[in-house]
Every structure is written in structure tokens, then in C-alpha cells.
Length: 363
Ligand SMILES: *Cc1c(COP(=O)(O)O)cnc(C)c1O
Image (cartoon, rainbow, N blue to C red; front, top):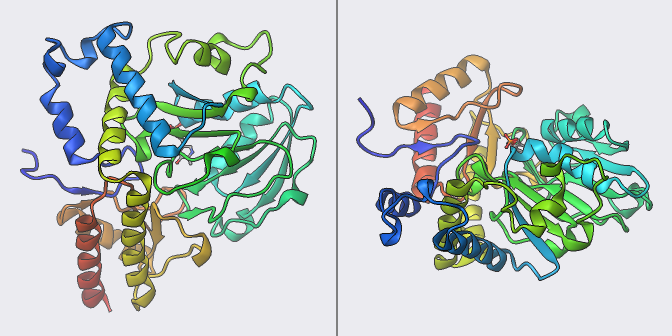
């Protein structure tokens, strides 16, 4: 059994990785660059591994243009642990933080933060089924808040911030799990940016936190040691055993991405893929996309064929054609095509070709 060729995987995560990265990893799997062992078997304190993690960080810094006053942390616990680590570490001033609710992940983050301090919901698009991103400006945030929190790309609902909101003071904290490295942003507009790697960067098990250094060291005395950003920053993400293999694979993704022209080249490709898919949906008589046009995600394209029965048939027939995991999130239904960085243009082309045929057969 098994597929003789690779298929197009539209899963929201874990998701596709670049084929050349997988080939590099395969080639080094038993004997990484003459070390005589796999990176999986290697001490994280070895010279070879120090170089691996050092290069991964340097490449990420170069890709995102990160200045010296930002630290890069390679952590575990997924994006979910950040829902707790962020308030635990950052609410040491006024104890207040303001959240914008643009989807289920933001809701979860705000609920968790409520255990730690005075959390206010500044704006929410829940009444509109999270089909848009509410406009927020500096006046919406409490000037004394310890931070303001947004979700940059809403994986489940297929929306994203088309701009970086102004907070008028409080550092901006953003969950960018499903979008980091998909398009250029000015990282210095943020106090903290984080992402679980399994959406757009690498294997599950690694979370990347990019934090302005003045926000480090504010955790309470009794904070669990793993949850204090300072502990990880002071030890170069080596306080305990890091997710060593996942960091290595993410590093290979960064290296290949730089070779291909960095974030600008990736963004151009991502825009082509998204335009192709939304363009087809908008012109079709069968499909529709619920997300507001200005706020459409470049990464997660949510759409429907108009009825539950048709959507179910679509997902099943697509799978037979090697276009897999097109079902929408269980809370939303319909379809979702996650077209992260590693999804090739050919994959989107194949999807559009299938959609065309399905429409003809269904109308
Ligand atoms: C997937 C996802 C999460 C949860 O990630 P885990 O790594 O599974 O904890 C949080 N936020 C967003 C935006 C996501 O897409």
C-alpha cells in the first residue's frame, strides 16, 4: 500500500513541507554531514548541533529582518502554551490586556489570559461568524494596558489582518501561527510574535517566539521555570532539551527559503496562488467564500459549494484525485484549502482544475 507519488495536502496543519527540504532531511537521516549519526541522535550540546540551531536562528533573523533588540526563542508546547505564557509573563504592570477576537483561537487565548489578569475584549467579529476582521485603532486600546493582542491569520475562518493595527502605546502581541513567513511585515511593530511551526514552518513540536528584549524578565517570581521567557532567552533556547529535530528541519526550511529569494519571493508566489483560487471562486456559479474580501487569508481559503451534501461529495471526490484534507474545520464545515508556503502553484492549479470539473457535473 501507499502512494507512489506525493499528493497535494491541503491540511491546515500539520501540513506540506518543501520537497527539497524533505530530500535534504532524508539524505542526512542516518548520517548528518559525516557526523556518523542522525540529528535525532545528537546531543543538543554538541558542536554540530550548536551550529544547526545557530544557523536556524540567523536565517530566521535574516528572513524577517529582525534587529538586535529582538530575541528568537525555540520552544515547545505549541501555540497553545503561549496562550498562558503571554499573560503570565507580560501582565506584571497594570495587569490589564486588551484582546481582539477574530476567531476561535483568539477566543481561547483571551479565555486563558482571563486566569491571569484584567482582560478586556476590544472588538469581536463573532456576531458575523468571524467572517471579517474588525477595524481597530489606537483609541480602542487602554493606554495603560500591558499589551494588546491580535491573531494575524485566522486559520479556521480564513481571514487575516490586511494591516498591522496601531495600539497607541501597549506592545502588540500577535499569534501568527498560520502565517509567519508568508508575507513581509515590519516585525518592529510588534512586541511579541509567535507561531506553532506545524502550519507554515516545519514539523509539529516547535513553537517560535519573537520577543522584544525589554519585554523579557517580567514574569512573577513563582512562575514555572519553563514558562519564563527569561530562562529561554538567557540560555539560547537550551535551558532544557529543545525540540532538536524540529528546529533542524525548520532551519532547512529557512535556508531553502533564503535561496529562493526570501519572504518577498514567497509572498509573490503566495499572492499568485491565493488570487488564482479566489479568482476562480468569485467567477464561479457554484462556489462562494464567506470571508470579507479585504480580509481574506492568503493561507487558508474557506469556501462552500452551497450545501452540506455537495460539500461532502466535493471533499470525498477530491481525495480520490489526490487532493486531500479539503474539509473545513469541524466547527465551520464546508471546505478549506490551506495553501501554505510549501504548497506549489501546481497544487492550486490541480485544485482549480478539479473544482471546474465538479462544478460542471453539479450544476
Ligand atoms: C493551530 C493554531 C493554534 C494552536 O496551535 P497548537 O500548536 O496546536 O497549540 C493557535 N493559533 C492559531 C492561529 C492556529 O492556527
